[in-house]
Structure formats: C-alpha cells, structure tokens
Length: 261
Image (cartoon, rainbow, N blue to C red):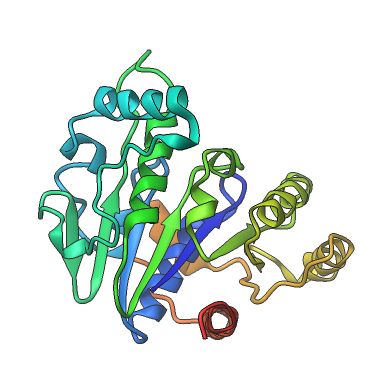
C-alpha cells in the first residue's frame, strides 16, 4: 500500500491533481481518495463518484467525541494512544454510508465544518492521522487531499504517509509556501515531490528557475487547460488523460519502490 498526501496553497490545483492521479492509478490497483479538507465540497463531483452519506467523524460519534479523544492524548502525552481503529484495519470494514465505491475507486470524507462557532478543525486532523496510521491494505493507493497551507503538517498527518506531493503554480505565494512545506517535510523524514499546475508558455522558464533556486525540480507540469476549468465550473468529472500525469505516476512508483522495495 502507498499513501500520498497532496498539498499546496489555495487554488493551486490540489484537487485537480488528486483526481488526475486517482484515475491514472486505477490501472495499477485500487485507489482510495481521502478528503481531509474540512471546507471544500466539490471533490466527489470531479471524481465522478457519489459523496458518502456521512463523514467518518459523524459515523464515529461526531466532533465532540473525537475532541474528547484528542484531549485525552494531549493530557497523557506519548504514553496514551486513543484510537478509533484497530491497527492494520482494511477499508472494507467501513460502513457503506461512510465509503463510496465505484469501479475500484473509493472515496471518504474525514469531516466538515458545518456550523458557525463550532470550533477549530483540530479533531478532523487528529482523526485523519489516526485513520491513515491504522489503515492497511494490499494493492491500494491512498491519495489524501488537504486544506490549503501547511496546518496538516503541524497536525501530524504527514507522519502517516509515504510521500508528500506539493502542487506549485507560477505565483510568489506558492514559492514561499513551497519553502516551508519542503522544510517541514524534511523534518518529518518524508520524500518531497513537486508538480506544476497552470504553467503557461510565458511563465514556464521563470517557474522552473524559481523551483531550481528552491532546490527542487518538478516531476510533471500541467499548463492551463480549458477542459479542467470547465469541469470545475460545472461540477463535471475530470476525464482528461495527459502524458505529464503518466510521468508523475512513474516517478511516484520509483520513489515508493525505493521506500518499500
């Protein structure tokens, strides 16, 4: 099993890359997409799969119950492990109202902010880490779509995945965030890979130079693509097949084979 977290700034194309990779990786085995973004709602539409009736957090008793488990861990330190899952559990044990399945693709939502003044999203981060750290499976690719920024690094989600994939775009804020994400990934001892998104002909040379200055080279680059824009606008599945996506999949396989030969 391989676990990959996709991160980047807001609007960079994280969900786009999650969808493109998920559909390409179906030729390699089963794919589980984990929606760990507590705000955005459109990912299942882009995947072409029905959203589950319930989030994982709702199925486990709601935000207050998860918060209680988190507080118990915080009070007890490393001596306490409060888990909602058996170590090495398989996704097939999850109830159907939590997990949507279609043609080898599974989709799950950790939790969503639903009400004003309901508090921070830390319980979602705790649950995502617990879920990813406990999950096992044969011939399974796990893709985690995260919220914008790097808060999930602080929540420890990165410690439970094999690879961090950063989606960069030709914008200053994207490069500044990349530097922080790269450093935090290195602190977690995980491989850090970069893909480019929305990179036009006029900006590609500068984009590559900025990445080089930051000590990284992209394993794939997508230009502005009208087909993707239309899918996002209308909430239609992204059906695009692009050679750059296949390059990224090959690179991921190479890195993961080096980790788990």
